[in-house]
Amino acid sequence: MKILVIEDDPKTGDYLKKGLRESGYTVDLSRTGTDGLQMALNNAYDLVVLDVTLPGIDGWQIMPALREKGDVRVLFLTARDQLSDRIRGLELGADDYLVKPFSFTELVLRIRTLLRRGVAREADVYEVADLKLDVLRRKVTREGNEIALTNKEFLLLHLLVRRQGEALTRTLIASEVWNMNFDSDTNVVDVAIKRLRAKVDRPFAKPLIHTVRSVGYVFGDVPEDTE
Image 1 (tube, one colour):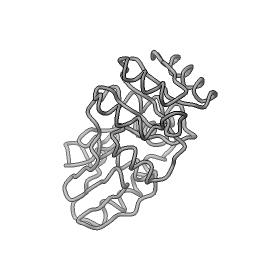
Image 2: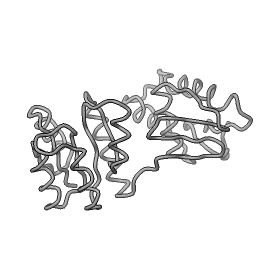
Image 3: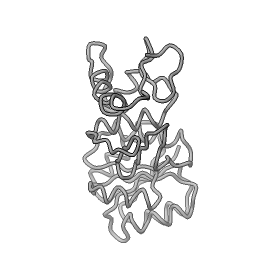
Image 4: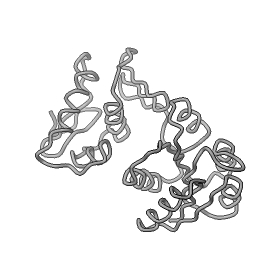
């Protein structure tokens, strides 16, 4: 898999290039928006890691040209951390948006997810039964009632909804939401699920979060061997 990194900060760019190569990817690096766009348009890349603030032209200007090309996935990696920036990046057509400072492990996990998923983009809004989850605006409603969630609760629910019908292990949940290896002596996942259920399920007639015995949790209709 071939990745283009468009990043003007020398330390960050070199760190990304080295780390991604050690993770098994072929990596090119551009330090300006102008050169990065030309490289992206003239070469076949599987994914572009794109900063917003760049010399020449910025990431906001680059994104529409990349989307016109149509066959490359794009992950914004930027210090622009406002919700409005995230919404703008995703509305321009980016496949993902990660804020600096970042965990390199999380970056690699997101890249792997994008490359497995192919060019199809994640849905902006999910609807399961009477629950609606708006990814861009980080808003959750059920029966039309808005549910206030913490950042981790939203990430946890997003994972469950995105992979509805799948029995997700505690190890996978801990890795995806907390970027940590699951320790059997740690109950962080179970505690978080309990709190999420109190907000998403308990006030409503039909539960959507279910326990799969000896496995983990599943979201959606009740499968066999669940609680």
